[in-house]
Image (cartoon, rainbow, N blue to C red; front, side):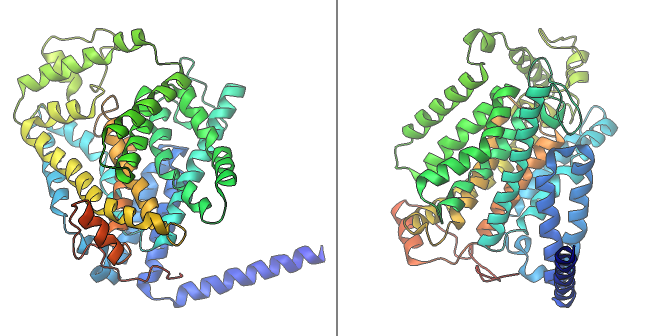
Length: 458
């Protein structure tokens, strides 16, 4: 009992010391700490439900505003050169609301993503200032997929998930999402968690690292297989193909073949590789409806969230899905029918612009870092967040509507971390310049402006 009391006193004293150090630190540092750890917590608790996903970004936003107030000069947003890409996104959303057949309904549909998705890139980009931050964010992703994967294992064994008591849906696992769309979540959340391999490899040999990664991530892969999401399988396959594209030779066909093999393996694990299941998928009918709606509203679209009312007004019905279906199950058709050619073009400039910008800057730095991986794994971890964002674009081929809040939030978080990692990346060196010149990729002169030391301890 005495030892327990002494331990409690020592812990209390340590907490008081930390609180005093926090109080005496500069305001910018205080609010950065609050911003970072609230964002970190939002990643770990993301699968816990709508309330968490509604509240946590707003809490982060408060800390972000306070951080900007005290440190705007050194913020990532102020130093972000392709910021006009966000203007393109804003204009696309404006078109989807202002030119809608039902302005109020479209405003409600698009506005639902404001606090759950559209503010997350700005929050996430300020949360990366050094390699330690990236490590912590990778660990947050690992923790999220680990506990959600265990929830899937529990659901498979007991018939209910341990958080909300949800049963499987049509024989497919749902985790705490109450729907098998959890397969898309676990696939996209797994991608930055793959950075765990490089964290462990800094201190362990290959075999122990492999065993620890397998022990940590197998529940997530179990849930991915049990949820049976083919679009989730496509995202994982695309992730491995993109990694090979970033690190491999100029032979791009190897990336495609590697991604195809990964896709087949995941589909076989899910038991959804049958050709007849693909041929009979109801999405083909939904895509036809979306295209017909677009042809009726080619320039500015029918409006955000107006898919159902628009195809009904044309006297059309889905062949296999319920008449109440709300989206065409394709990210690009959803953008096209809702915003027309004008809005779709603006949206694709945003999505592909940041994808290409990130690729151009991460690839040469990653190739230069690979021979010195034991010293730094900064760009290895940053690369997986870029892959997480781009894999979302592949997931969207068979995925949800653009404004699906949890889906959008996950992608925007990955985008923001990637942006922050690039802008605050380690300073350019001779090796990086040599690799960038060798592969013909121009590196931006000021992309590595860094107000904080990479080894800074907070």
